Length: 371
Image (cartoon, rainbow, N blue to C red; front, top):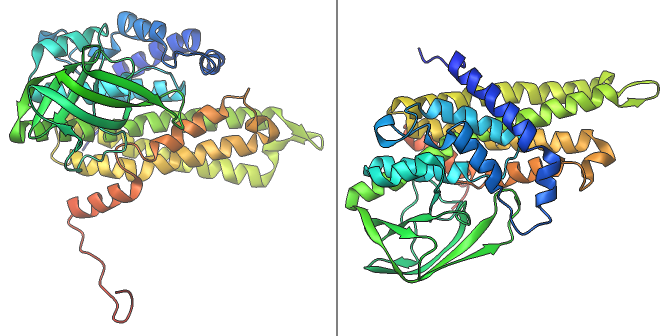
């Protein structure tokens, strides 16, 4: 049977990450960044990649990585979600890296593994793994032309992986013919941008079925492992709310002793426990190359996105007036959770994919009902 428990190495990685994030990414610092012009934290990213080597975890050792796996990557995402850390880990170390692994692009993999360079897959953040085509507005050729909207983790990227026509193309994000424009997005810790290509030089790294497979695997990995980030978001919300209701007193007693609040937090704990099992299963399938990876990813996003939102809403509401203020970090977690509900496809898209992958029959039509 699949072992969903955390191993000793995974727990050690978690401890190291939590210590580093507590020191270098406290929520007050993240809040302060929202008033500046640099939403991502390059210093934090340099520490994560330089000290802990997180960018190279899924990359084989012979290509300059740590040769770990996606279970370890899932632990990183849990802790980054718990800290709502403004770094491009999901876009570069997960999605783009998975695409390059599928293409066998050794040189580019080595660059990403060090963390000194980052990459992004140039598709809208809401693109589901089974979506076709991926970037319909980009015309293929020696020089790409077109537009892709709502791309995540592209602003700090050095490299863009662009699906166009029947190929996947590598484009210098800082080169000629590429313009990235930030757009207003719900989650300020993971901003989106529109990318306009106007004669951008490109190198095709995969074609035909290989390109389609690489992009599909990248989006599936993103959907599967985003669930671990959502578990981290929900865990912080639960822990913080439990701490608050223990210390907040009304009528001479902690508000956490009131039955209605106990039941509400118990419901969040149950949901979180279920979500963790689902997310761990998706990460394990991805790490093992299990044939059920697509099904596990669809299940993870059909379930975990809503759990993160529920936990974040409970956090805001049970903090009372404090939870609605800009100075408290609860809104960061609610925004991250809400933005995640459309990432890599909304829940209804994943439920439909889940039914198809599990070979569930369509519901029978009732005579006289519907068209």
